[in-house]
Length: 118
Image (cartoon, rainbow, N blue to C red):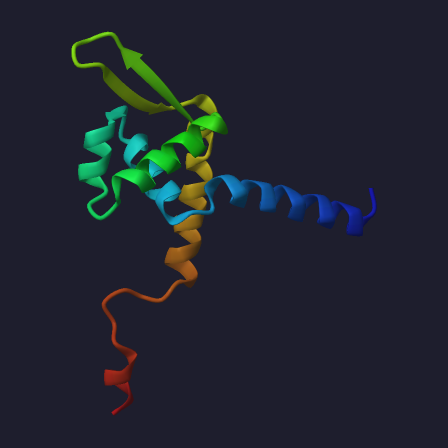
C-alpha cells in the first residue's frame, strides 16, 4: 500500500472514531462507566452540569455504536443500568495514551506564566 492511501485510510479511521467519541460528554460518560455500571441518575449526578436531554442523547449515541450496553431490570419502577461493552472498554487504552500525551505536552495546571515575566 502506498504511503498516501495509507495516510488517507488512517485519517478516515480517525474521523470515524471522532464521530463516535468526539463530543465533550462522550469522554466524561466513558470516564464514569470505566468505574463500573451506573444508572441514569447516578451518571447525571456524577456529571454535574449535564442536562437530562444531553445525557439521554449521548447514551443513545454510544449505545447505537455498541460502546455501552443498556440493561433494563424488571423492577417497579423499572431500573436501567448502563455499562461498557468490550468495544467500549477497549477505548480505555486510547484515553490513557491521550492522558500521557497531555501530561507531556499540555499546559501545566496551576501555573500562571504571566506572573513569571516580571
